[in-house]
Length: 485
Image (tube, rainbow, N blue to C red; front, side, top):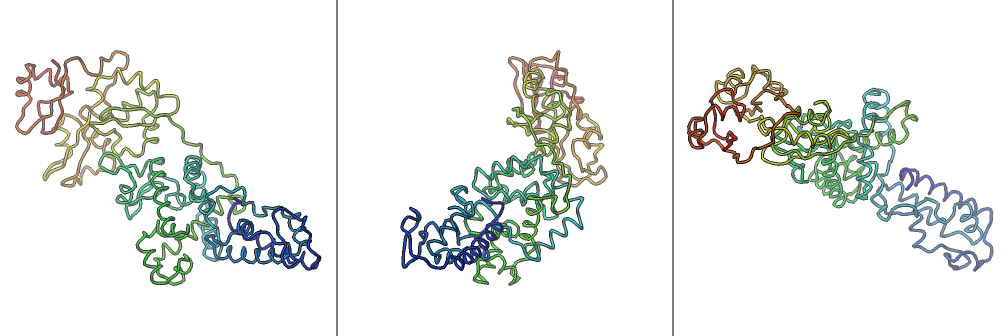
């Protein structure tokens, strides 16, 4: 379709006006049956079939302004004489609005960018009040725009929904709101889980640009299917379906603007659609609105690798031959900078480094990969005491738990504890196989001691400590120990 239905409506009005002028010029001559295969003659008029008029000027669109303009265009063309209609077709062709080139699901394909004072106020705000910040949003969009547009296109959703992510998060996958919404699409935890995203201690897929985009598309599709309008779908995305349903029930209207005028929506939601439209208008033509020389960031590109069990980002980075920051930036969904235990995780690495990772990682001993456990803080514990208990350092624990205050530990707070420090030594060239033949994993139970486990498996405590990187004989229920036989 054309850029927006605003341009469509303008074309419809222009076509209708031109048709009226043509009628005045050419009058009402006798009919000519040779005019066109697609026309029929009635009462001295050559009339395009209603089915074609409906295709040229659709009235079932989201914007009532567009619908009314298209109705007027239909009526004007229907009333044309043969000669006027011939001239109309010569000037505009059989598809004046370009709708024949639209996809089959065109009714869902574009958001009508209707302008009004509220929209203009948001445009002015973006370009006058926060121009630097909005320019950052536009630049940052380059990282994910092609991915998002591709997924929207495949789902038959409007391309302009890209700008919903712009106004929600500024295209920042780590965005976190006061309401605890997270990620590019600012999902609440409950909605995220409903649409298939994992949100737990180890992983928050709301921060994964790809997974969260898939979930947002499912959610927005459901909202459009319920409300039949992208304006109402966007309002429901912001305020929740229940509030929009109640607004429709109170007003008896399915028009977003009627709900705004009736003030049945919160102020934030009354501003939400104008804000979305303003962002889309600027995004379509940044220079027109004073955003010159915007150079979008490069598209995020990566390979993926499978990582078994809990492995820290520094180990993954060293095996892949990249910086830890590079792994961190590509994998914001892993909350602890370590993959979850007891399962295989998919991790993104910079393009071209997957093969090196696979080769190097296979040589790392299991004891050097799995170097983490989770400790739950109890009354009276200090960070130094916890560090001493596990044979690590306060600095290592703080590095693994960003945002934790060493002076304000909370009872019940869970800490990731590196058993050999955050940067466990990795000797890629001379490392032994990942798990020796005949080895086993023992889960420590209540009452177990290192000496008892060593005796049970006919090994020494010194060997157990060496195999598991322990600096003391202290073990705790839930710990996993490797025993080699």
